[in-house]
Image (spheres, rainbow, N blue to C red):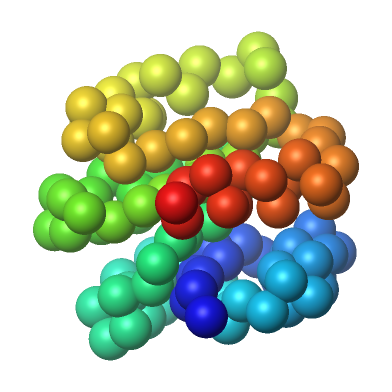
Length: 119
């Protein structure tokens, strides 16, 4: 059973992702901030990290996490196409550990992206 870490602020989107993943029999944990993200990943080495990159702190977390754990798999969610995420993701992309999907997306698309990352 894959173990997935969601890094988000506890929004309705977070609840929706948790519900969708649990229906697919995934174990899910939620980290609300930078410190929790690093602590939980260090402790459990999740199979996949799902992270909304809308907040600058999360962009720092992904870079730090991937510097420490080059094998971490991250599915990055972005919502605003006008924001330049390239600079925030350059290091992560160079590790080959990140896939980016743009919001909005359907449950089926989200779950397929998760499965693609896990396979």
